[in-house]
Length: 148
Image 1 (cartoon, helix red, strand yellow):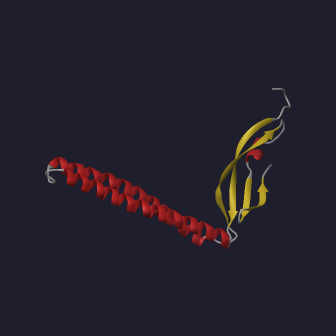
Image 2: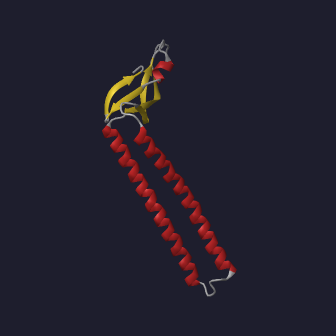
Image 3: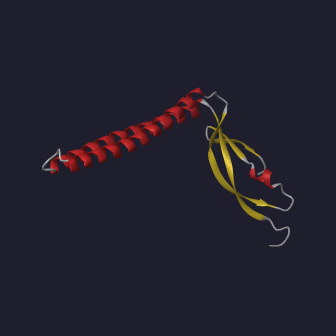
């Protein structure tokens, strides 16, 4: 590569959103949808666990045999572990929902990240070129901060 030839690099760009009533409503709807999915997964897990236990009991000649009881215990342990994970996930979503409800209008919040490519030339400030943010208001770009 010759001196003075630009270099093509990839960078991560932070995307921020300005909180508006529309943003709040959309965020709340998305989180409510996630809560519904987690609740459905918990309900499905309970049903599957109970069905597996019933299947073991119905196939066993002696439902109180230690091996049968051990199988049932193992299923209950697995179900409880998965249920704990789902309940933790639900708790995180509830915390996010609470944060959305208390965030002030016109405040900027992190929306995520995207990647882009840029050219780096001799003499460019790499740190400035890497520090780029996009600010959205209801999905529309209102500002690009940093070196484009």
